[in-house]
Length: 87
Image (tube, rainbow, N blue to C red; front, top):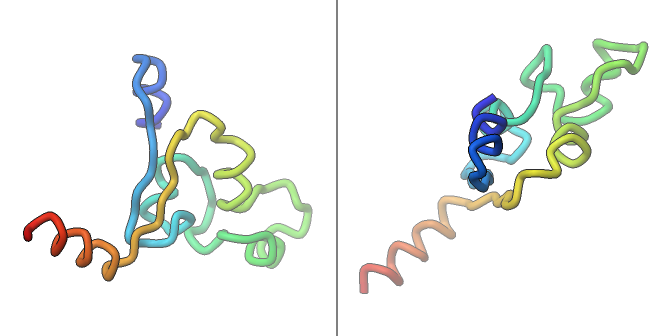
């Protein structure tokens, strides 16, 4: 994982995304899942009744204590920031 390489080099890491933080693109930085829709326990249990697989949300919260920043920015927030910076 890219995060592990950066942390080993003494860098800080974080996620800022316009998608959900547990969406397929952002979660590729920190999670391992057999299916992109395994965002919550309910979605995992349908495919893994043994309960051995962690959903993407649990992986973000429990397994990635080294991530310093996690932010979800909507397109409207980015538009407001761009307007303020450009004025």
